[in-house]
Image (cartoon, rainbow, N blue to C red):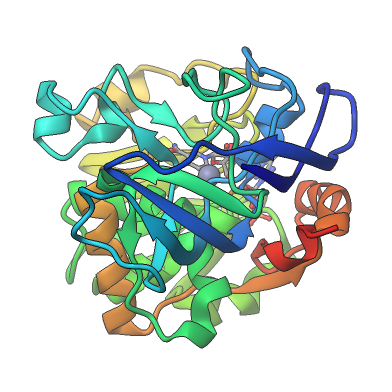
Amino acid sequence: MLVNAYGAHAGDQPLEPLLITRRAPGAHDVQIDIAFCGICHSDLHQVRAEWPGTQFPCVPGHEIVGRVAAVGVHVHGFRPGDLVGIGCIVDSCKHCADCEDGLENYCDGMIGTYNFPTPDAPGWTLGGYSQQIVVHERYVLRIRHPEEQLAAVAPLLCAGITTYSPLRHWKVGPGKKVGVVGIGGLGHMGIKLAHALGAHVVAFTTSDSKREAARQLGADEVVVSRNAEEMAAHAKSFDLILNTVAAPHDLDAFLVLLKRDGGMTLVGAPATPHASPNVFNLIMKRRTLAGSMIGGIAETQEMLDFCAEHGIVADIELVRADQINESYERMLKGDVKYRFVIDNATLAG
Ligand code: NAP
Ligand code: ZN
């Protein structure tokens, strides 16, 4: 089946309209008409070949929402017309310890929604900047938000789960002081989720202009991280700092803000490494520097249900397909509050 998509032929080329093929749904597959797809900073890293190994043509997009169009004969959990989502994972080995624990995101055989090997043409997965996608039922998420919120639900499929998973892993809740560094697509979700989980939330931003907006997202305090005095006022006080920054920066400036046994989890994935942190900043207070990658399927469903229950969606700016390249430039300038979402109806013709 041929469908319209948007993608790039090389890392230094803009994205443009493409025709791609999708397989006919197999016995366990769900075929989805994509309504909206969020624009994640990872899409930009990958399609511009900032991360190694990009296969071209590259069609990014892993914050996918839409309606089920058809299901395979053995699919019982979904029916045509259901509102569903696809995040960053479209396959995994299904039998390793990670898959059995519901942590398919850490399976060595995890297949990402774009740029991972597949028997389907052209040999690597193509993502959600497209009209349709066909995915094994195990990786399809149910959306319980009202339909009018669908576009703003899309970013939950990556930005939402990538921040929810470490917040839960580190047992964030009432009585915990949590920092969120970088108020972009991931960071703004991190603030909303940490607030909803009952933590005291401090937002760290490089942008003075985001001060008020961060409070509206649910931050109890806002620190402009370039201001040494404001930073020093929070020394040795955090249980957890969730760092979403997409560029290398000074990690020590944040490690010293952790209290004894506190941890900083990096989810931002810059194309070039951070300078190594000063180990004394870890040793002195038994601090932890950790990482986290998206989340498992069960946890993603839990996050979607938590968000539906608490009325949480992303703050978005809806764009047409022909605005994707411009949206990338604006994302790099921090000129978006806080996630671009593509209206996939604009991919047609
Ligand atoms: P984004 O919307 O561009 O937000 C990143 C934020 O980081 C910016 O809004 C900005 O916030 C801050 N920032 C940017 N450049 C900075 C710099 N040089 N120094 C300090 N702060 C800077 O990006 P995103 O979509 O949230 O993604 C963030 C990162 O997470 C990307 O690297 C992405 O690839 C990665 N990611 C990882 C996972 C995972 O599983 N671990 C999943 C998805 C995305 P302020 O203006 O507030 O400072
Ligand atoms: Zn993403």
